Image (tube, rainbow over all chains, first blue to last red; front, side):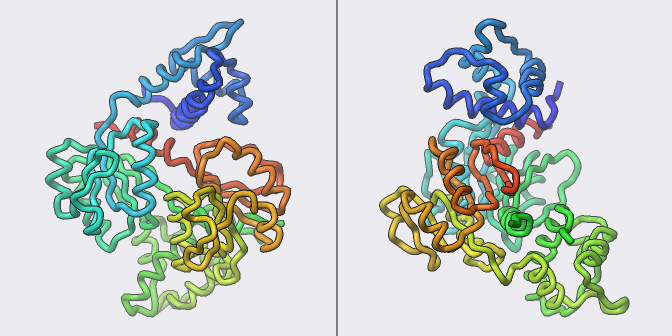
Length: 204
Length: 204
């Protein structure tokens, strides 16, 4: 069964919170405390963990480490699908740092960039290739996920090329809208538009 | 009248697209072409521009430069509310670059960070202060918007402090959930959760 989108979002947040909570040396947590720390309804927490197939004890709550592991397994944070970062400016580097912290189910196995400073170097163990290696490396390394981080005149061409090479999911962090064929999953965030909305809707 | 959220998002996208389109030296554009380039329904484009109070010519379409200006005025891209960036890692730097490109109605007048390398330096003309200057600088420079970019143990304390000093809008780019009082506008994006969703929902 595929989990609902909101459940996946919240499971990801539970895991992030619990990984910090773990350092407090408390082995158990109650759903109402998890809910309070994330400012959400405890009913959502209980339903999400039920969908995960995870149950706690009435007297002690949920086992923190087991819950972290269980979410990790469900979201495949251990296995790791191969991904690449296309464009290695600040946004690409922020994404690589998250991968390096081991917080993500995406194993970044390649970076692509145009800058002579980055190409042929490795970052957190991940090699950076020039853009003309895109098709070959994606096929050779069986990469299925791509993070697009730099708006480029050729973004449409790049998109067509990487989908032809086997990319089935794209996280588009540029301000360019992409038209994707069916079967390719898209997540997107445009920092420019977020800043414009922040300015427009923040009023005294 | 406050525009609907989706209209503000799309106006921001129209403007970004038109600023690139302008370089093609075409002075006019039809709503159907704008819609096609953004892969949206032309009805939305016409309704958004009507809400903006902008009208085109049946034979020539919309005047590109006037449309850019009109969106900029509506979204106050010229005026610029004062904003600050709190945390100057890769995400903070990506936001500052957008400000430097003049694409945003937020005028970044201060950066706050803990790193000795950044503090007391200026970046694109914007000074970077140490975190203990937060309250003073926000009040002195009449800053109303804050971009939070680094998850910190003290994020809750920072949030309470900046709201007490006059912040009325927060763009939270960390993975920490914030509980905000009424009257403070929140935009948020968590790159970790986006990467987890990408991996989970991309399936062959």
